[in-house]
Image 1 (spheres, rainbow, N blue to C red):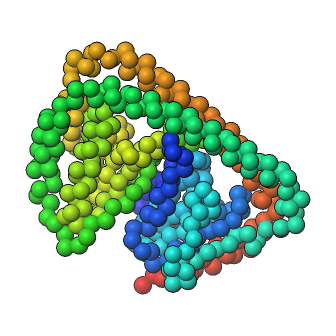
Image 2 (cartoon, one colour; image 1 turned 90 degrees about the horizontal axis):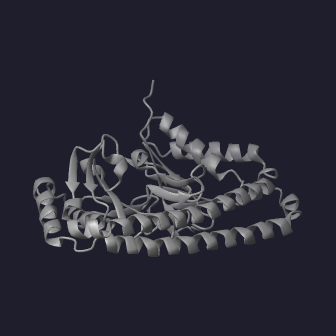
Length: 361
């Protein structure tokens, strides 16, 4: 019996303090062998299409990436069949995607060809009304995320007051000398791939770090509450690894993509992360917390606790609006789902799977 492929889960987009942030250009590292772009409204079966394709190739023993929706992690925005370097992605708003290399690489699959246009048009005014309300809800959630970002910046200032950057540099140099210096350079150009393993969505604050890990991956944990220090540490390591020719997956914080949570290097089967979920998995702890000033930590202790509460409340308010948007989106989907020819879509999906199988050498 065929052993199933390894499945990883993460996000290619996020709800951030600046609005929706897309890393969809990294659906496939480099140029894909084939990229199918799904077009169609809500409720047209895109997630089902993607999930069934992923399951089919995972059963065949191929490693698969599952890219979850940034606003609803029960929905999918894309899948990648790793060994074939083939991907299928949702190319509708807010991550609108058009072919870069039409026919040669990219191909649009228009699920709008399988709906009953006349019946959908009967709900025209309601559909327009729902879409306007969705826009308002997301705009409101982004305002709260912007406020949360301001409070997070204030937290960073309190936590990092009088930070010992000389000590930080020494810890960085020690880590590089023991872990990275022995790593031999590769005779190629290293490429970064930007992603998210966490999301602020209708399910709350979702973190797929454990599902995003590389196969048989070693983990190093960066111990610190100071995101600025963790980000600078990970940036420095990424730069070195890229110069040595290693491809680096760089996972960003959803609220503020300028903050880096984790980096992963497939060729080294290594993850280095500031995510507390990896503490028990880590075979090495990098303590950056020891460089915080003890007097400042004690001085601002109560302020940090109170500011963190404000931060949490603002995030919760943003999430409430995203949850309201999901309920509205679910209602909007019904107008399309009840007017789709899913039998024909199933045949299209089977045909697409067969086309991908023909790429197997």
